[in-house]
Length: 91
Image (cartoon, rainbow, N blue to C red; front, top):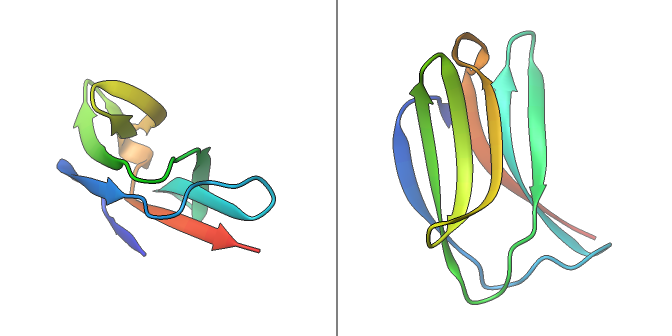
């Protein structure tokens, strides 16, 4: 599911960790022409990560943080950011 790109923040609790070749987590930003920019995020069990989405100085940024430590970031030109979201896959 993708949500409109506007300033927001939230929690991302993790009950099952990232496991190579088994379980993956992603953050996504929808771009023009139905393109999706994705980034794999390594998340550990038992953490309550936070995420932020904002547009500033002509850049749209989606971040996942553990406390004040940035885990991953996607930054695109603000005019290209249509929506954002999070995903998981399991094999």
